Length: 450
Image (cartoon, rainbow, N blue to C red; front, side):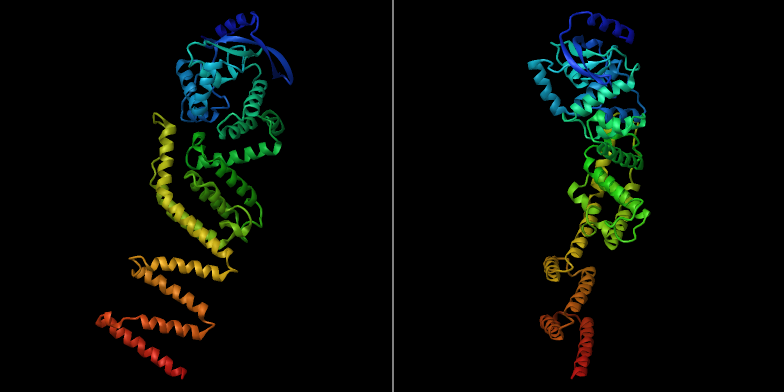
């Protein structure tokens, strides 16, 4: 059914007595409008509905076009609406079966659904119900796009935003409105948010877009799912550190360091690293995060880039010709998370331990106690006599000797204990000769002290 036919059919229904009345915020006033029962077959879904905006724009980013007036487009939009919150949709579907449609929707005079796309989708799944209760605006979508956008935003992102919208939708909605020339004040009013909150949305969305561009996922907003909190943290850090000297960062950090921080965080975000731990990278007082200590940060960053280069370098390019591009990209990200897990986890834990040690600088007893526990565990390991382990143990022994240096008696007692533990009979001839040479030098040193 084309637009002209839909208008004609809907106008005929408007001549009938209304089902009920409903107050609608339209053209800057609260107007009492008639609610009519509109046959579902006269309606067209809005593919840019706020509930599925990230999905439809991602789909179109893959080179596809959604025509909601075709059966194919209708089916696709219904699929996206259903999958947007499947659990909630199942519950609402049962509720509609029992009580029918309780809340009217809003459509244009040519049948485009402005508010109520999800409800219409659910009604289309119930054979016994073939109509949609709705207020009919006196305009087509193209007649007043800004006014309809305002109404849609205020109903969906304002009044209905608590009804389980995908978290990314509010960021994308803010960006799209801003790109269309809508002021931040207007966006805040339409969305029922403060001006500062909308500015935050735009700031986070900018980081999200940069992330997608970095991985060649331009406009593939589905790849932001499950990562909102991580992006909020990163956006705040970039705001704190970029183009300024923040006392929260290590002394003398430069713009390149902030760029490195962003790239390192991209990998952690892509792998969906645990949010609370993620904050240890750059959040809070200088002493509480990696970016606050130049030595810790430099080692953490260098280890990351060295390891991640081969992982990212071995990845296949995104396949935008796949039957289900979103599923393909999700699988690609999941493989990256699996391949990088050991590197990311190990590198993070090492930096975290260094940070913790720095925080306990004034508590040497605690540091030594923790080190002792770890050395005891290492000593029980079957590989503790490997050459590389022995070399590290020698370094550790030198550090311990420095601690004991203030007490020659304690050092000598320790040496005596070690000598008593040596089993010379277990050494081979070559090692025995070396042992006797060392003993000779020890004896010379003892004679010098007498």
